[in-house]
Length: 180
Image (cartoon, rainbow, N blue to C red; front, side):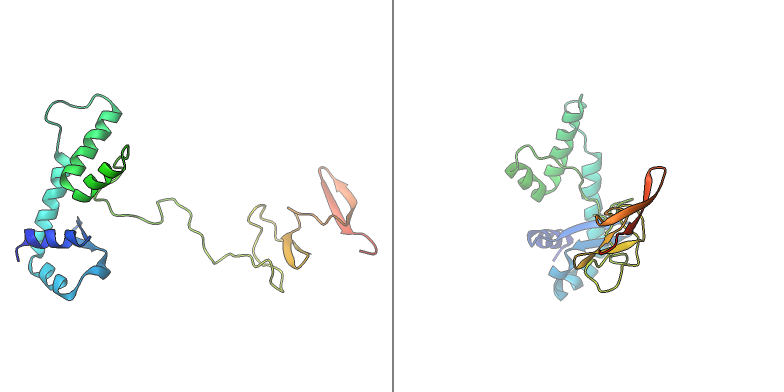
């Protein structure tokens, strides 16, 4: 099997090939068989050259008539270039009219740069038997009180049964009243 036939066969099965740095990436990896892996190792240099040539073609292709005059025309030209080099993109653009290509042959990055990723390190178990030890995510206070069967922040949700005993400026020091 030639490298061109191997690329065609892998893509017909839904696999994507791209060159990142000096490596050839094939995704999704779990769809690769051992025979595919052997064939890729045999034709590795040729496969890299083919995929890089396709990428270079998509990057350096220019419209034959004239340069685009607006952002919209520029985006349409980019979509046409990508669609000409990638059958799957062409089919998606045909099916979803009005869609446009935002990124092509770029590795997906998660989390996005400067993005926030939820972490289980600072979770608040509001129904735990012990008071949370982490600060309130809204105000940063570390004072908690029981509210029914759970915990809530004493600063964000002051106890409605508390009595104001001392006022300083705009804050009120609250203490629970008698019989409560």
